[in-house]
Length: 331
Image (cartoon, rainbow, N blue to C red; front, side):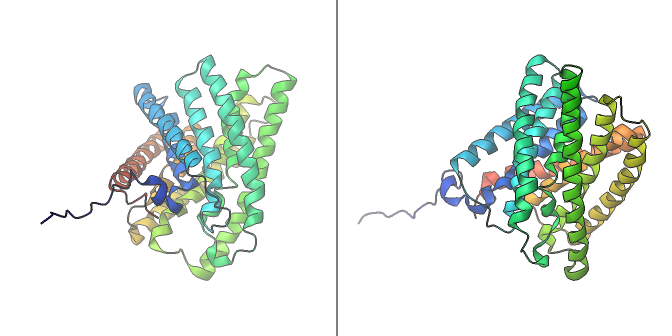
């Protein structure tokens, strides 16, 4: 009599192509965003830690980009994933900024310029294109993730300010800085529209299910990043009045810190299980951290660095576990 062994299902890592589904969408670039900005904030504090985190950020960006190329899928018709088309743009620029911050060398400037250019082109495309794709969606489908496609131009403005000193002084640099300011305005207009929709959504439908509650941290992204952008651009733009930075930065940073507390309370009350939405604890908090480091007392900035690091550890640990057991790779 022949012995028949039970079939052993292959590990999800071996059947990645078949099991990818929506869970290998552009939202995975949030890991590159969060890891990149973590390297940026650690660079002036502990360079060796920043170096390790930068390597991780680069590896994450390469791995997610490779997976995206292999699993070519169209999410333009997906109610949630379509908004995360803004994540690749921000992932590219976050890793580029981390590269230049951790390694201020000519090769880093060149690499950052390439990543910034690619991210900016993608970001402008999402900021202008994605809102048109979802303009007929019902109010109940609106969520904080609607900010993802409109924030990249603000990231372009912020990270562009890091590149500006490496451009020739004069007309070229002036035109480049004007472009950065234009990108910031484009993003702020789109952000204002989405924030108005979010207010209406909360009034009509509440905060949403527990699994989506971490995404309310995304609201911090355009707030903190715009403050950082105004500060960084002000530093490299001699013609900009010094008063503009605190006039905009202080009230918006204050609002960001208040919202950070509100979002944290929402998460504690909801107690959501792990999902990729936990990466919302990283990049958005990182933007407030960079804003606070620029404008707030040192203690505030250091506290936010600690919170960002804890959020990154939670998101990274959960993601590694989910990849290993396959739970994040199954649709």
